[in-house]
Image 1 (cartoon, rainbow, N blue to C red):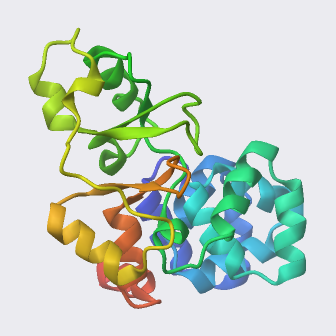
Image 2 (cartoon, rainbow, N blue to C red):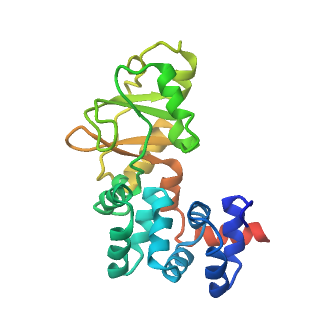
Length: 245
């Protein structure tokens, strides 16, 4: 399993009995297991996580995307959820705790707190260098957000967004802040599923900024985050079954 893609590892785990699944999971490193976790149905994620020792479970949560980790923690018994949050790395736990303050079917509940952010004086070359980070997903890489420092979420004042395609068409020395999409208004954290889905359809986007009432960028919703909340609860299991067939 170590050399397989996350989706293939998830398919193998999905086909196993729970005891066998837990045993095989022990042989995977934290990053491999976290990647596979994010491809499994929710009930199997919960079952597998609770079968792991608490320290290992916390290490796996550390490796997961914060929004996926938050969604999983919401489905755990409260006592276990709090224990795992205490065991996680402080920075990772802080991101997850922030996401847990929002209702699940809102922009705040769906977003990732790790979008691509640049300062107003950064150039196109600098923005593209950030986008090339292998840890950045294709959806997040499609848009760069310009904010005043600090550049971690919640950021300083949100200034605007620049599309990747615009960055690719401009000279490397151009300031990214001169290329903003002036017609793109951000989502609020409280925007519900209907408003978020209409936003994506209206602007034809794969990622959207989420800005709070203080004018800070708090995260970004990607189209896959949106679909996760629009599709049936067990869609991942159905997809794995169809892929196997």
